[in-house]
Structure formats: structure tokens, C-alpha cells
Length: 123
Image 1 (spheres, rainbow, N blue to C red):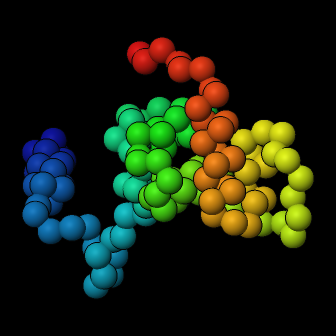
Image 2 (cartoon, one colour):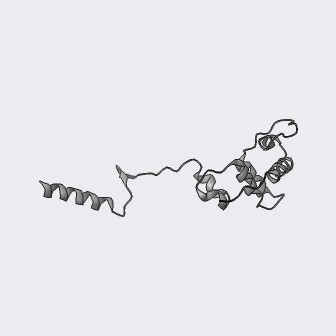
Image 3 (cartoon, helix red, strand yellow):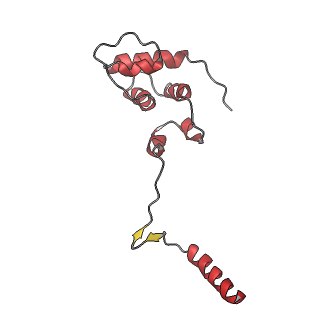
């Protein structure tokens, strides 16, 4: 009896070490990534450490991209997606920058807040 159990366990471990991907019926098993996996590839290297980063750190990371470029604005838009309003008032915080419709105004707004954030110590 013990020999039969050992043979079953040994064969099960041998099947688990095969080169083929796991199958469900005749289709390979699909591995699902978390929602942020696609965005993480587009973010700067500092964002890939594994710990979730604050909005302030992500905004400061955008400052490493050349000023006045579409790439920097895209970086800011990835942190805080735009939601234009017809006539926004002056921005009171960085989250209000998303309401500016014009890209130049939105970029200047984000730059002002990102540059005024005190630098955090790197661990």
C-alpha cells in the first residue's frame, strides 16, 4: 500500500515538472496580471520597485523628463488623468490641474506643483 502511494506521489511530481504550460481542457491556462501591470511598464524605473508610491513621488519622477514636452505631460496624465472643464478657476492643488483643457496650461500647472513638493529621502 505504501509503495502504491509513493508511486502516485512520484508520478504527480513528475507531471508537475513538465515543460508544457498547464492546460484546461485543450486550451492553455491563462495567467491574469493585475490592472496596473501595463502602466508599470510605461512609468519611470523608480516606480518599478514594488512598493506603491505616493502621488507626490510619481509627480516628481515626471520632472526627470525634458520640460515642455508631450512626454512629460503624458507622464503627469498617467498619474492624474485629465478631466477638462469648460472654464476652470485657478488650481488649488495638483489634482485640479487635470481640469485645464489646454495642454500647455495643464503642463505648467503640474510643473508648478511638482517642483514645489519637498524632496523625500530615498530609502
